Image (cartoon, rainbow, N blue to C red; front, side):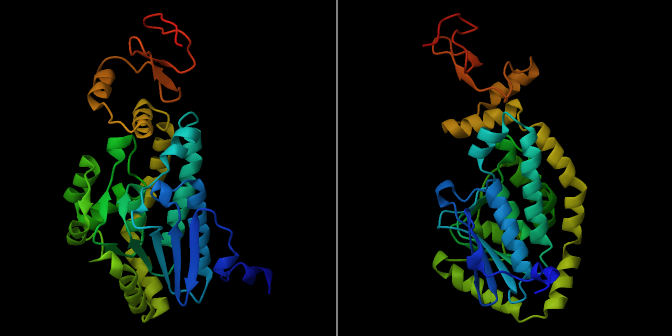
Length: 320
């Protein structure tokens, strides 16, 4: 086989040695499953790269007509970025976020430009970047127990990886602002009413519904379908291309900020963010410690200090 042609045909799914996703081809349907149910199918950088690679392969395989994206288990479709990875690898080195975001953008670009119809199979909670993955697909079928939520403004981020761009196009400006500013979840039937999903079915009927929709897509003309997608993507592509570079830079610059650190710390400790304290600190002086430094509270006076300190800088007591 000529070298060029070798790179333009699909590879048997079983030949891939993916660590974070399951990739299968059955007839004309390729399925990409985020296989991290123990962490609610959030995506770390490896997951993003594997989704991108599988997407490119499905696009190259002429036997594949429809690509389905889903999550393992019944609890979560995808809950966005892996916050443990963010805290461990990015908080102290914010420039790493710029590199992480490249993998995120590349995954989305390959998905939108695959040239074949895509279906989001929502099998559980769909949060943050998970909803952006949902919106990036052409059609979406949700199990009736699914909830959808954006959490960026409540947790130390900005949902500018698809949500700020595409939610207004899909659900309208007011509802987009409601989801992005209030960060409250909506149920599957509300999502259906708003146009955020295409269909809602009981979980037991989810696979059948996906197969039926895929069959309808298969029985359409592939070239006409591809160009229809190209035309439909105009406003999504326009809003994405005008903003995603800015988002990548802003998010990278703020990846080690006090607000991000507070959000990640609350996630790690399973506590609520003290929003009033953050606002009070912002209105007076800059935070004593930025997100670049691990902190702990003095057991005597509760003052924050760098984790490596052996004496409290506030009350002077030795830390045991």
